Image 1 (spheres, one colour):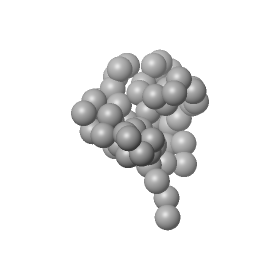
Image 2: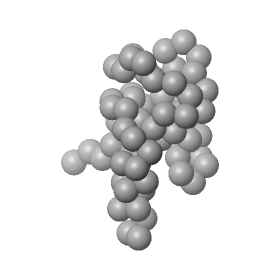
Image 3: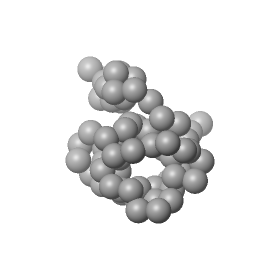
Length: 69
């Protein structure tokens, strides 16, 4: 089973984005599967590809589930 992880976009450079987990850890992901994303948006990532844009509320709910809060 694969889990998509919520990240917030911090920088965009071409088809790549620097994203951050709620913990602050950053990584680079590919944006080729999405259009219309911007800095500050929350996305779901699977295998270093952004797969879906989500709302801030959805991101916070997922983060709470991961943290068992």
